[in-house]
Length: 287
Image 1 (cartoon, rainbow, N blue to C red):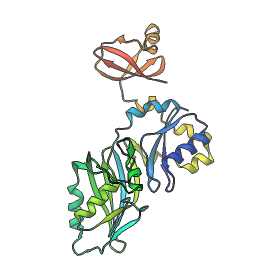
Image 2: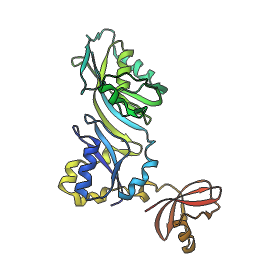
Image 3: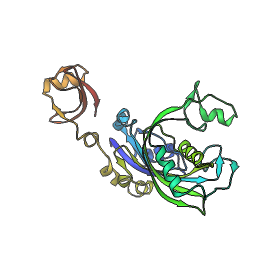
């Protein structure tokens, strides 16, 4: 079983938990993922199976889409529902109007610098930020460039002091930090209460499978696997002759009068991916 499966991660599971369950239930040797989801978050978690783990370099730059619930009036140390409450404040809905919320959300669209949360796995001087946070140590956190492609307000619940919105963003965007920044612009405080990832690159929630499905019918999961051939079906193809195939598989460059780029490689059957650069084809990922 080689390729990618899309898991709809349930709340309460770490990404590592999901990897361990899938590895055991599907009896595969290698399972990896292209980006973690916090235990409290749900939604799209692409998993790479066996030879599919070689595809990670083509997947880590993917943009993402989320459904978010922002809780206003409360600040936590982790910027999410799991953290300790640091401050509480009454939300003034007379000033936090629908128009104001729309304006604030739209103000975040575009390229910008974002300060990652202290409770994150980013490394500074060889240590993860959350390690500093747990010891109460201060550390200089550098802002990172991100891009918000779109923001859409979905619902406002004044009784619960909650705002629900959708966001389409670049890799590396911390939604917890975004929630805190939105609350600040609204003149209050807040944290990320709920997070559901609905899309990672081309992978959507509609094609995701649940852990329950894997538990009940693991034998039927193979038909849900996205193969390398399927994933890159829109790439151009190169058909190799027998003598070319041997050189290709051994890592020897082959002269090909083709435009620079990535190609599907065939020799009657599908072989994998190759890269053409300056009219020379070289192996990239082989099944």
